[in-house]
Amino acid sequence: QVQLVESGGGLVQAASSLRLSCAASGRSFSSYCMGWFRQAPGAEREFVAAITWSGIKTYYADSVKGRFTISRDNAKNTVYLQMNSLKPEDTAVYYCAAAPSGYGLQSKEVYGYWGQGTQVTVSS
Image (cartoon, rainbow, N blue to C red; front, side, top):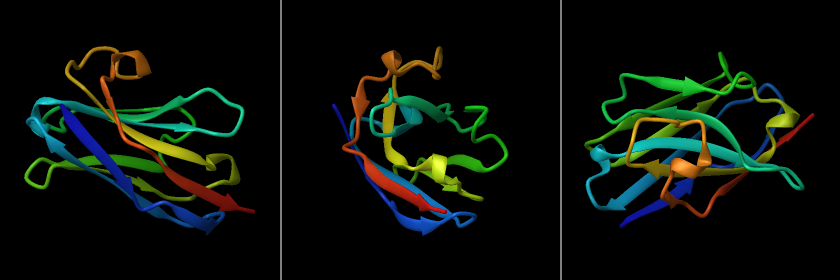
């Protein structure tokens, strides 16, 4: 079992920055690949970013590439999402998730554990 708790969301203006954190507890954090997803009202949950066990490989949705950065600190059992140049269309609930495999990390189906989500609202 892995428990995930996100934090760092809030209300910001367009062009601002936020850093989301996801603290993990339970089984070995470093054995899981981690991902961030988001879900806007009335929309499907969509992939944002993912990172492999060691942090060597990262993946991003085209919509956030160049603006968002995913990272992890295995010593702190935490994964981060640095979000810069935020846009109103980034408004959503952001979820972190853990996957035991490094394949298909853009697909939410490979993730077995999810956090409760944190709201990010970007005003224009």
